[in-house]
Length: 399
Image 1 (cartoon, helix red, strand yellow):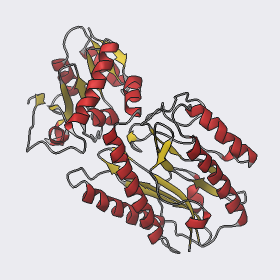
Image 2 (image 1 turned 180 degrees about the vertical axis):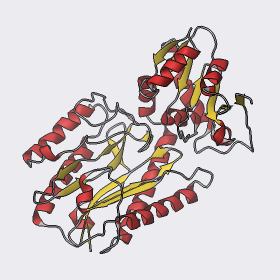
Image 3 (image 1 turned 90 degrees about the vertical axis):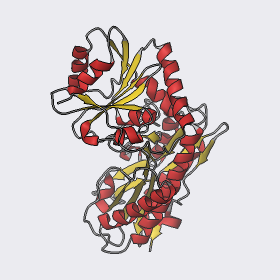
Image 4 (image 1 turned 120 degrees about the vertical axis):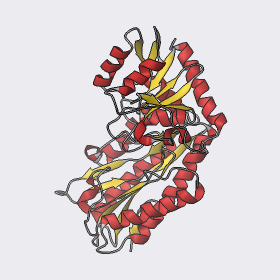
């Protein structure tokens, strides 16, 4: 049985992004390769393969790759995917089969020969595969490309920003679907299903040629609001419950989000105090996002507001993060997060959220997790908030 094959089944499918957009990304990468004296880059992560090739792979225990040189671009994918990687991908495609052990590395060795400097993703490739790559290419020198590629992805193009804006609109639609489904004794997963289906239908309408995959909703109630990433359950909504609305449309591997605190029927005095304090932090965060500010400085200033309300001890994570080719199961741009340890300076065309959260444990008054989330595009003189769903008690106590 053959170790390497090609399957060009059907026709190339239209991309969400233009050919010019994809070529611009590759051109910037190749400029960086020249600066770093890299002959080849081997991407292995879902986010970078999607960013440079417009293909979102499903690993299922198999390795994937994207090879970029100054004159070549091709993905290395598993036979189980058939012709989809070639149809959806921007470049060419080589397929390795399952018939012999480590055919993936045989394919790499077949394409990469001799002494060369290869950029790999230190933050993604695991130790076992790193050693197998060294064994397959003993004359090559493996160097880290992850920070360089992340820095490129952090500054969005006009086409990326347009897609993210549409994603934010669809998230708002999902949020309204959540609100429409909220009622006493309705289960969390029932609300989430209605929201997700609504967003998927909207994505299909706006992007009829795209892959429909990975859109989801987390809708949490009561004690389940204590974690930002808690899955939906069969818990039934009760009067007085704190609720957490989290809508995540995925378009071509690009993630957007809407997150809101809500209450069903009523909120206690202490709940309102904590909620309004978190909103005060949220509003100030929205004011602070502008070019020239460092992520850490924004985090430190917002901490001071929580300190005034004696709530800093309940903060659970940073104040915001970047958007783009990322998801709950792959990839993030760790260099663009609003945390005390991130010194990145905001630049025009970065896209970042403001999303303060505090979690008060069940043993205390006002228990629950409070979180608001808006997406902002950094502009030349400030920022543009592309989230339209309202926040606060005057809007989100659901009768």
